[in-house]
Length: 401
Image 1 (cartoon, rainbow, N blue to C red):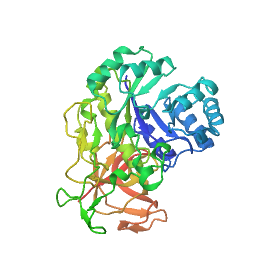
Image 2 (image 1 turned 90 degrees about the vertical axis):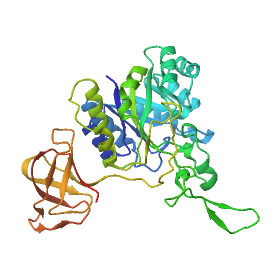
Image 3 (image 1 turned 30 degrees about the horizontal axis):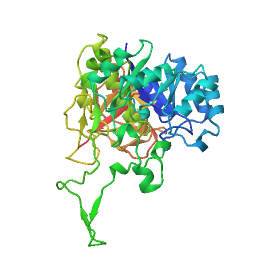
Image 4 (image 1 turned 180 degrees about the vertical axis):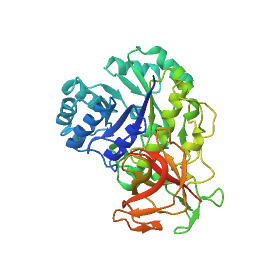
């Protein structure tokens, strides 16, 4: 069965991903990863995360995928030895020098070649296999037909992983120089400022100081504005192409994003394998969390990938609370994340049978039994009246008006 691999920028997101159906998660330590502004994990947290995943029969992969300069190798040997000691399931590497350290100092770790290595042909893929790669995370620029050719050329034991959902880097498989040039923060060392999402203007050479907007229409400027990748309706084709793992982008995204997207892909995969009855419009489901317009990227040549409608992320629903304790109807203890009030209709996001079921809030009260008309304080623990059976970890959301 194909693997569903979800992002985990911190422990809360990791537990959310596992609860909502991920087979594996990818994380980073405090150094050597490409998302320096995610919460990430220190040594103790990496061990805790590994134990948690293995207790749930899930896998955990650690990104060590910076494009390394000489000085970046300080401490790498000890770090890899520690990852081997706590028995993480693999490390994701882009730099051949880093890969050589893995083979020399942590030979028991599975070596996964990052999308940052830009594997776009079968010859590069086979070379990585000869160098000891267990898995190759293919470049986003490949079509399904090219993936089939790479699969046919590789030994069966070498796995293929593809990004299937999330933000698309504007540079070739994420090897971007723009952030470093404009802001001095190296995206290839995890410090990307996402300069491709900024708004830009033009200054004419002979009119210094006069700026002119770059504008297609009245909704914004879109010089470097890509759509978001979404392959949820094409998982069967990826399976046929020989992909072993479906990867969701988003270690810096919210727990609500992780829950929504992981849950949708889990249900779609289970539907394909005959584990559940088809009953969900999956595009509508992933639209309930923050996204730009969707594209299938390079999988199908010729599709338009540019976003000429809006540069602002949108979502149809808002995360308002997370369930803290199991409840069989009646009073349920929740932690508030966004304002909601009596009389509003809330929808349940759950890996269980209450998924997408709704109820109207008839009563809210705090831990001192004071009744409230409106939940206003973020992370306040509250009781909410509901007739639905809810589980710890379920999410309550509200449709945006």
